[in-house]
Length: 178
Image 1 (tube, rainbow, N blue to C red):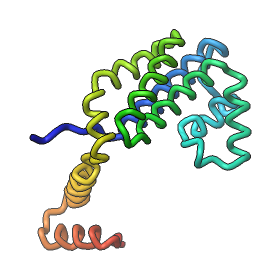
Image 2 (tube, helix red, strand yellow):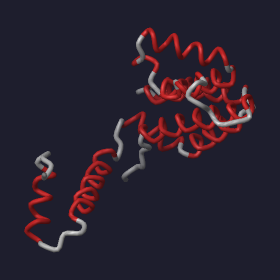
Image 3 (cartoon, rainbow, N blue to C red):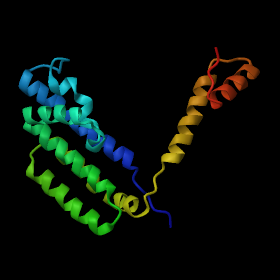
């Protein structure tokens, strides 16, 4: 009777990828080149992927300048924030109302990136509802698998089993060999 739940980290990661794709596309459309350090949208590209509530006042002002300079970035940033709000819900009825807002926002735009994200979310809607209901993800098992892979990677190349064992023990203790 186990149900599959979506990991909210990966949903947010997909929304941030959507912003990056739009930022790059807009740079090519407007400037006919890749972004450079002097371009505000490129210079402050990390601000576009940050949580709005975690930004300082100064960072929010920079973000406003970027979004005002390019309306498409503003729209896509709004859609990303709708996705984040959707994942914060803990109640099915609240989820349904926020889903409707997200759907209307995506339908109002003609951006391929937003429509692609919404198709992905629609395909995983049942799993999203499981996450909203249970708040459970596979994050712990992913962390354990990553730790195991890193331990194997650290030991690679050692022919002496004793050295391999010491290396792993030092790594798991948080120490790094000299």
